[in-house]
Every structure is written in C-alpha cells, then in structure tokens.
Image (cartoon, rainbow, N blue to C red; front, side):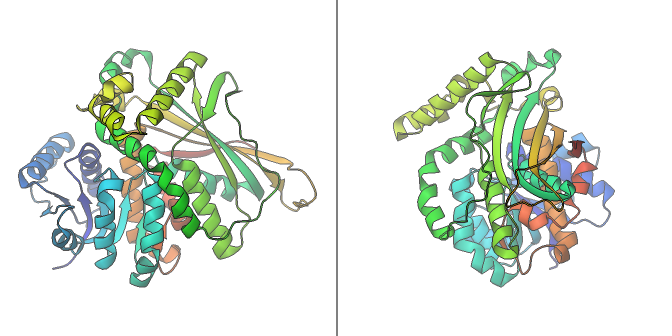
Length: 420
C-alpha cells in the first residue's frame, strides 16, 4: 500500500479539527495531494470529516480514516506506515507525544507538531536525534504559533540584514476589535492549549538536567549581550518578558548553526507587549498564580478543573467563537541590532538596526495550522534544501534554506521588513 502524503493524528481535538479543515482547503489548490486523518474513535473521525465538508463545501467522505491510540504502539506504527509525513495534533505532548515520535522514527516517517513545551522538545532531541538521523527522517516540533513566527522571523531578519546580526528583541502583541470583545468573554483559548501550558510550567524543572546532557559544551559569550529587560515601555505600550518556548527554540536554532557551520549566533530576547499597565499587571498576576499552583499536584488539579477561574475567563472547554478567532490579530516586531557589512565586529559597537514584523490572524488555531501544514508540505517538496541526513531539529534550522517563509507570506502569515 502506497503511503499518503500526510496523516493528521489527533484530528478530533480542537487544533486537529482546524488542521483538517485547512488541509482540505490546501488540497483544493494542490491536486494530487493525498492525506488522511487518524485518532481513536471511528465515529468521531467520521464526524470531523462531515463538519469539515460543511465548512469547505467539499465531499470529504472518501478521505482515509486510520484508527490509532497513543497507548497502543502497534496502532501507532500502523498509522505511521501509512504516512510520508505525520502531522501530530495530539497534546499535551509531554503526556502523549513521545510514543508518536518513537513510532514515526521507527517507521521512517517524517514528523511535525505544534508543541510549545520545552521539556518535551529538548527531551525528544536528546533521545531520538541519532535514531532520526540514521533513519533519514525529520522530526520537527513547534511548527505553530510556538514558534514559527519568532524562530523563522529571526532567520528572515538575518537573511535581509546584509551584515552581521548580533541580537534581536521580539515584542509580541495581539489585538481584537472592540465589537468582538463581548463575544470573547466566552473564551479565547481552548482547554487543550491551557492543559499544555500547565504541563509545560509543571515540568520546567526537568529542563536543567536535560540541557546538561543535550548541551554539554557551553557556547562562548558574544558581545555585546542584549540587556535583560523586566517591566519596561516600548513606544506607548508596557512590556514584560514572555515566558513561552520561543526563546529556548531560537537558542537551539542558533546553537545548531554555530555548531555545524560556525556561524555567529544571534542573541534573542522576547517580550509580551500590552495596551495598558493594568492589562499587563492582570496577565502578570495570572502568570504568578499559575506558576504557584503548578507546584503541587493538589493545586494543579484546581488549575485543570477550573480553567475559567484561573484564566479570568480566557480559557474554555467549548468551541471558541469563529468571529473571535478570525478577528484576533497578532504582531511580532523583531528589532535587530548588529553591524553593517565590512564593519569591525570585534572592536566596534553595533552600528546597524533593522526591524521585521510577522503578522497574521487567529494565532492559536488559524496561523498555527497554516504554519503546521506548510511545514509538513515543505518536507515533502524541499528535502533537498534541508540539512542532511535528518534528525530532531527546530524550524529555523530545518527550513532556513527552503521556501517556507514565502509560502507562509502568501497564505496570510506575513513576513516583512518595516524599518532599515
């Protein structure tokens, strides 16, 4: 039996259903693309195809359905043997990701996901990089909002810098027009994303021993080191450090480029930009509460059982309203500092600035699934431009020489240079 180009695993979850709908839309523009969906329940998978058929206007009843369960290794291997690239939407990845990665590598199947959990990401590199290289397959996580915009954004900025880029400070902001804010009170973050955040924070303490094994040798210090800003203003808005996975993923990309190519690594900081000091303080307070409550299993259950309470109503177990998702806009402003071509990098201060912006809509479930699917398609189409022979790697390292940024730009995830 010939392999399908893509199989979407976890297709009945919230992110999975959005991925199925977007894949159906892409398939219209890409004749010959073969794809299927996978999960535990035949009836739920059939229901997903019916829902996607209604939303796209296409009859998807002939799309192959594969039954697979993360607790059944044989079913995972059978699923991976059906796919050239496995698109894994089954999270939290800390709980459910490793058996799928293991099956994909064993079956010589390329793998992508949207994990934003650093402990999982780096553990997979530690455990499976050598096996993936030997199998000649690519295992590439964090192909969604975490962390395509920032990881590929740094690559994009560097490709346009025409000199030596020393550091990047990224500022993340979102905007929902006032007329949709009432609808947003029913929730803007799905419970599955919340669950992944809780597990990522809970398992943060595992990062240190993983990194000691994964990065045994320290990189040298490159000057100047960008400041570590705490609460500060950027323009008229207030900003604080963003605690997501972006910084760790950009670091892995830059470290890999330094290790394999001797390229001077770009130093990276990332911040959350809020419209007012009050809004920022509410977000910061919520973050502190989440951190404190993840410290014990008893209080962690409260976070998981009462997400609306601890997220100030932002998290929902129901469907997020489409008008809210489709009108939530995001911007990542990447402010680069370095030297013009020919400058004395070692003995002169940076003399060049450049700003790139990555913009889009529906960051968690629209831009994310677009980035995820085009990452998978890039593996299918442009393996000859990716690092050989394969392995567990970041998007920035894997896709830096491909057309992925161009593809995303053409599909409403815009990469632009705004200031030189």
